[in-house]
Every structure is written in structure tokens, then in C-alpha cells.
Image 1 (cartoon, rainbow, N blue to C red):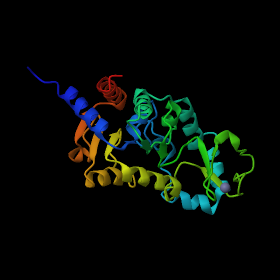
Image 2 (cartoon, protein in one colour; image 1 turned 45 degrees about the vertical axis):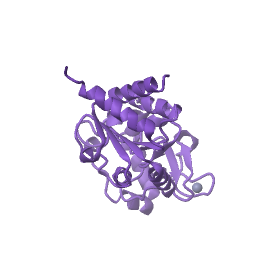
Image 3 (cartoon, rainbow, N blue to C red; image 1 turned 120 degrees about the vertical axis):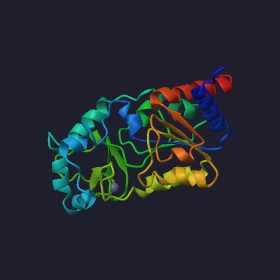
Image 4 (cartoon, rainbow, N blue to C red; image 1 turned 90 degrees about the vertical axis):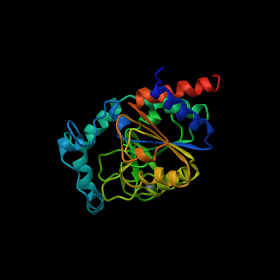
Length: 261
Ligand SMILES: [Zn+2]
């Protein structure tokens, strides 16, 4: 009788997750695309339409924050379009599956490269957003985050209500260091992680690329959820082929069954 490879793989992945002490999910653009958010590059991408942001975007911001804000806020500018897209997007079954895994104590934290807030919108509680959150504004002085509508944008650049520092979008610009608080959280999570669920990302961009490799090097297991082979595939204990919105709910179903829930 032919065996169902996909079912076998789901079972093996569920087993690894249930045996792990600390599971971290690392997510990327594939998950967002399934919620209708175009990738930055490629057809319909934000940068395809508006041009690639300058590689020294952060340095340009620091040199003239008011001008950088004016450019970003222009009615046809990329920031307006990003806000509209992100505000209209809804979490997909992949996001909801990760919420469930956290709720039943299987998943410790989500580290995401996505800036679309969809993990939080779905209800994930522990989320480290490596590249920031497009709906938030961050003080470059004290690192406090504010909701977009908490901050008046008549006088540019806006100033931090707490420390008077200059505010910028929380999304990390080219040339900008990853905010130290987020980076520290990612490394703390990754350091304890003995099973990483890598969904919708090939994890080739630093620092995200470092986390699965560290876990693997310490003898932890990697589980990949991706429609395609990636550079990480050779290092994965299990590679689940398919969109996150299909595969992650299957994984949850299997785990609930094993747990008798
Ligand atoms: Zn501040």
C-alpha cells in the first residue's frame, strides 16, 4: 500500500514540536502573501511601484527627518500605500494556527520578518518583529512605540511625548540597526529554542538567517513550512511542502489529536 508522505511528515513534525522544550516560529513574507500583501519586490510590489528605497535610508532620515516624513506621507507615497494595504489585510489560517499553538502551550514565541501586524491581529501574544511594525511609530531616542493615530503629524518631524526624541516609523529602514530591544528578545528566544518552525521564509537575510542555524548547531530541530525548497531545506528535520495557511492548520489538528483535545 502506498504511504502518504505528507501525512507522515505532519506526524513527524507534530512529534518534534510536542517533544521540544521551547518552540519558536520564524515567519516571513510567504505568510503575508497568503493574506494578500504583495512582496516588496516583483509584480505589484511596493518598491516596484515606488522605486527601491535608498540603501542609506536611515542616514537620510537622520540628516533631515522632516523631509523624510514629508516624502513618506505624500498622498501617493509608499507609506500611505503600505498603511492602506496593511490596515485592509486580514490574518490567514496560518496566523491563526500559530495563535492556537501558543494557546495550548506548544509555541513559545513568534519571531517575524513581516511588518504587517498580522500575527498580533490574529491574537499571538509573544511576537518579536525584527523589521518593525508598519502600524507603529517609534522614538529613536527612548525606543517607545506609539500607535499611528496617537501621534499628530502636523508638525514634522513628530516628537516623542515622553522624551522629546524624534519619531520615525517603527519599520526598520535600510541602513538602520535592528532596534536593540527586539534583537535582544530574538536572541533570547532563539538561545532557548530546541525546535524552530520556519514558515514562509527562506531565512536568508541576517539576522533572521542566524537563528535557525544556531538552533541546528546546538542540536535542535528545524521544521520548514514552505511551498518551495529553500537554502534551509538540507538542514531541516522535516520539510512540509505547501502554503502555511494549509499546512499549519494540519499540524495543529494533528497535535490536538495526539493530545486528545
Ligand atoms: Zn522617546
